[in-house]
Image 1 (cartoon, rainbow, N blue to C red):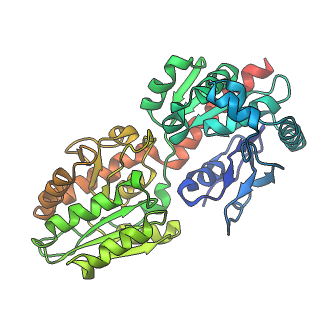
Image 2 (cartoon, rainbow, N blue to C red):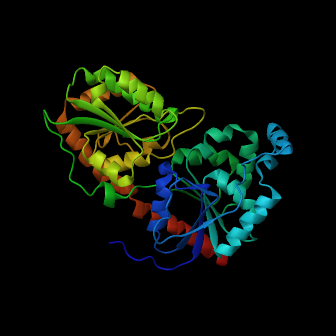
Image 3 (spheres, one colour):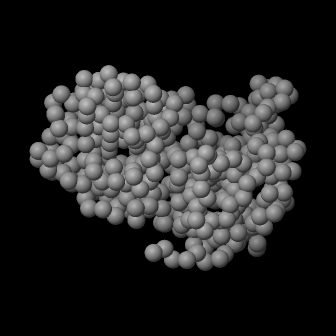
Length: 391
């Protein structure tokens, strides 16, 4: 049973859209806070979203960036930061929502959220910027966005990044004095609750991957790697969990495979169902790719799979390199390199003892990124910022 939250300073936790499945860690984060009272805020909600139990939730009217005026489009072409600034009406609505919430500080998930929120903050309101992925990778190709982000960094009292590579990327824009790497985390109480997966000679051999079905998540590459070795291991199966723009094409490719009867696409699942699927697998795959400037911030599902006790095979991309200790909890392979991924899958398929050893290492190392631990570190930074602001 979780300890009751201690009522402390009220802090707005703002994300553009509440309830996106790939951002489940935001809800987990606010539910794990114990020393502050979070007020979860956003402009929109995902269909079917339900507020986290016990967490105050407020919606912000309007939606910054939903429409760009002609002058803003021109300013963007000219590389001017003003192109990213919300309208006067949006600023007024956002400020009203923040003031009505009665908070002492604001934590913005994603840089674009902070760009929209910063002009609306009451004077002296502390701003904490929490960056994750596309907001500090693909979008930085725009000069206007980079300049707007530099202004927000100068305005922020703290920067929280989920990977060191993000801090390095932002450094030329200027970093706040308080800059920390705090990964998203995953709840060990859910994913490490069961026994270690069965890893036995002649036993089940299920490869599994979880994530959004889009080009950057590399599920098509993992499917190709599985097809490379499937003929050698008739007991091998592949399970792909998730949904996204490439779902239909990946499903068609799986159906056309000579090994179609051993490939299963589940679609979108809730965390409890994902935990059950992971506990029934033997090897976890994550082939993230840097597509269109996008870079993986942190592999939440990689930590979930590690907590479940699965050996990890992942591409050497973005924050994933911080999560894999070669030969201890798994192995890295070059992104886009299907042949090397297949070779590592073959290696683990033939050695259940190594799978078991790596799985034990994966569960042990996953404790570094437990949601409760990550939330406590983040709370400490927020409280330090509030304390400095009050002083």
